[in-house]
Image (tube, rainbow, N blue to C red; front, side, top):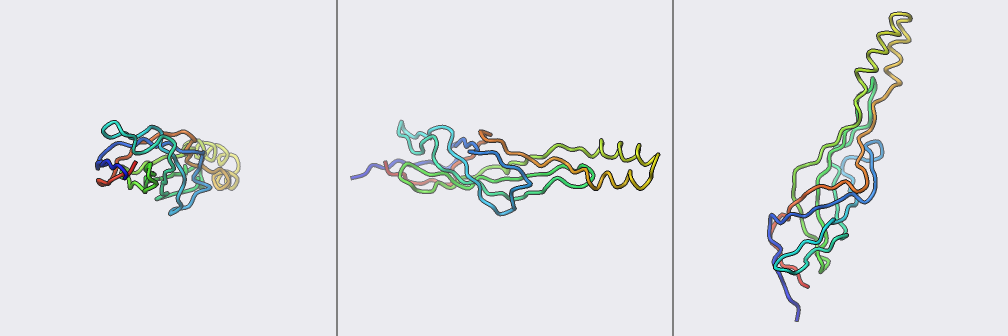
Length: 153
């Protein structure tokens, strides 16, 4: 006989990325791994164990662009795993990360160089790209259980 507890919709789940990613290496639609940072407990019963496998969807990924424009990354939590191996669907706001914006610096250098040699100043911006967006290992973010579910323990 197994025991069950209800994991309520809206219960907070804290996730963390398991490795570092950047927008140059990810594609829109790709799934990346994360883990549950803390136990999720209901009525003093652990229903999701810290370290449980979790999934995140890359909803948008842009590489750093010409003239120093920054890369960007948008991710959305999908799920984590309960103690009985069920997938727990999660919801939450999309997480948006931007790379370092170097546009102002590139334009200043381009204008300065253009004052001496016009063509070279314009070419600088074509080769000077912005930094990719980075999701560092251990980055934490909050999600919520999407709907009530029964978890066996």
